[in-house]
Amino acid sequence: MSEKSGDRSVFFPAIEKKYGQPMRYWHGVMAELADQKYPAQIAFLKENHGFSQAHANALVMYSRGSKTSKRFNNLTDYLAPHDAITKKTVRAILRAITDANPNMKLVIAWNQPMLKMDDKYIFGVMAGKNHILIAPWSPNVIKKFAPKLKSFEVNKKTIRVPRDWKVDAKLLQAMVKECLA
Image 1: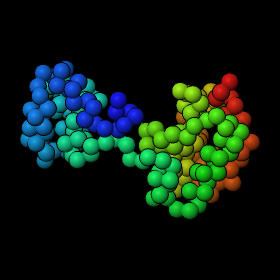
Image 2: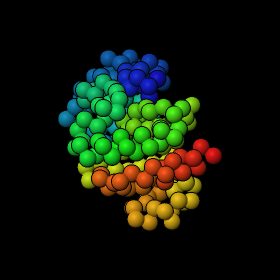
Image 3: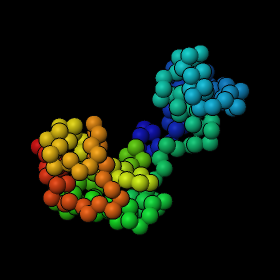
Image 4: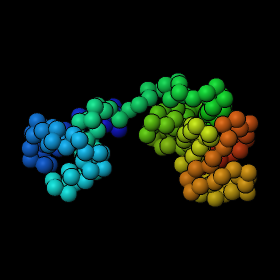
């Protein structure tokens, strides 16, 4: 499936079957829409041909030259555009968690570093230009740890920490322990 390989063309057999036309037809439709912006192309396929969002996105992005949804193969690729401070902090966050949970696997999912245990996502990290978001995969964890997170901007599913955060390994480990419970 595309989630693992990122290859947008894996949707093509389903598109042909569901919408009744060969891909050369759909590529022709996209050639006629080439001067339109992404939202207009998506809307056209959905409104005029009944495309699902996933199928429309695969076709539109493929026609715009994006053959894969996968941008990064590993953590090094993900961190490449970031400065040394951000790289160091992200690595320290992940290390704090994996040191206490050596069976966790670091994967790139949704083009972000994620830690998994078996098939379950446990914790994610997103490096921005001015901050880092950490995301325990449980909104209950954020609620439970709210008193300890007062110095951070806390959203519904993420916690915003500074790029130069002195990583609190005990806090991260406790949050992950709660995710696993």
